[in-house]
Length: 419
Image (cartoon, rainbow, N blue to C red; front, side, top):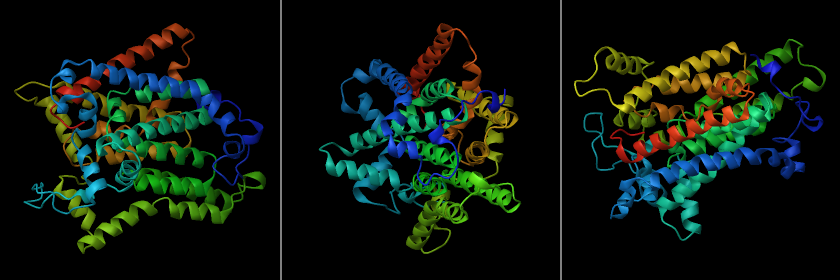
């Protein structure tokens, strides 16, 4: 199934690539633009609400002690406290814990600045704890991300497929991370709307939103790569005379958007390097955390070791799910290539796979790293949309929601590995 057979025609006000804003229909008639998203946003809210309800009903959530409450767990699990520490106290090069690099202390500069800055702003305005501010920011951006996913998929396919894609994103095995005090929902929001602007050939908006994604997570480079490669192809076609009339790009806008796209990433690395007195400053920080790019050797090692030489204590649920996610992600990317999805989506999805699977850190966070790669869900969403029975479709989606909800309970209360 190719995208040509499933994509709905654009409305007259959306045709053409010469709009100077993110989308003229957004600026002139925002309610008309947002109205088609309402069912998807309501469905996404219901999915995540079910996940939260399942956590709240878990026996450990009701035990005496604040540390066991669901909201506290979501706000303080694993790396979440570091974001709040940065928001309140700023960055520190010595967290008092020895890292993996031969006694080099952990540094909070491993965490990119936008999410902590947003937490600080909300905490300063509202009379709530930093942990609750972190959750509020993450939950708000998860809705923005869902809206962006809907916009991207509806542009490429049609609203029905976009609705399914949004539900699937909320019902991923690690969908619980979308409700935690993590930066993934924030990054997904910037990435989705940058890709939407890129599909609309609004270069400056695409570059600016990519810059914000690069200030949120290291994987912002995947968004910047999508902008840069798409811009390069656009300019080559223009110089070969294949872009004329309404399709003719404004070269300075293309170049400016391309320059803006990775600016946040390089800017933050320059800041860390200046603070630590070496251009390798950020990479040294990451090495202390055990993170480095090894071209997938670590991923192949733990997958082959788990399959061929399972641990004597037995294979855990985390490991089984992780292998399934990695294999499914690769297969879905190959399907997306076969379906000839738009270049920006293929570049973003491919780069997210390279970054997640090429990381040399231990295996557990890889599914979280892949969570923003929503473009990998498009083949599944398009396939499910062909089910004629509405009852059958919602039974399948509801089953995914239930499984995601209960696996989220396992991640938050039972798993010993960082999600």
